Length: 228
Image (cartoon, rainbow, N blue to C red; front, top):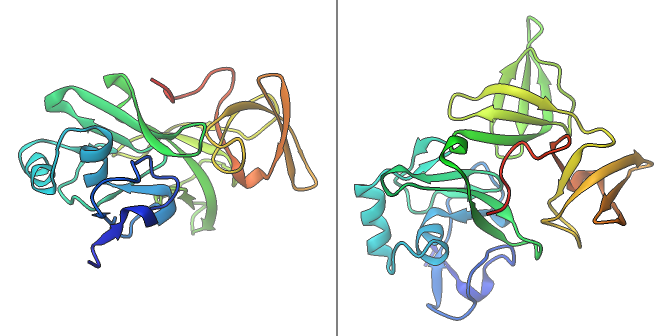
C-alpha cells in the first residue's frame, strides 16, 4: 500500500472524515510539503464530492479538464497545496486551497476571474548573473526576475505564465494570513516585527507569533479571495 495512507494517520491539516475507508491516496512528492498538501484524488472525492470511488476520480481526470494553477493535471496523486487554484472549466467550478480557522486545508469558491491569479510567499533568493535573482516561493515555484523583493514578502502572480503583477510588502499596516500556530487560518493586521516576534491585531486582539507564520496577502484588502 505504498501509494496509500491509513486514513487515521493522515496529517491533521487534511480536512477529511477520520471514519471511512481504511486507506486513502497518498500524494506524490511535489512543490508543497506533505503536511501542507492534498492529493488531487482526495480533493475530487472527499472534499468536492464529485466522485465516489478512485475509478470515478480517474475518469474525471481523463474526461474533464482539471486545472491546478492553470495547468491540466491527470495524476490523481498530484499534490495541491496552500493558495493553489483548482479549476474545472467544463463544470464552471473554481476553487482556491486555503486554511480554515482550525488549521485544516480546504477549498473556497472563487470567481472565474481569479482562476489564473495566485499569491506566493518568497522563502528564499539566489543571486544570478546580469542583475537577475531567482526567487524561491512557498509552493516550490522558482521565478527569475529583476524585481526587488525581500524574503517574507509575497508576489501576486498570473499562472501558469508566472508573470509578477505586484509585490506585496511585509510591513506594518498590511494584512497577513497566519499559516501555523493557534491562530492559523485567521487574517489580521501586522503591527510590528521586533526581536524575532511578529505582533498582529486580529479582531481587536493582540496576537504574538513567529514571523515565519505570516503570509502577507494585501494592504487594506486581500489581493485574492480567501473565503466563500
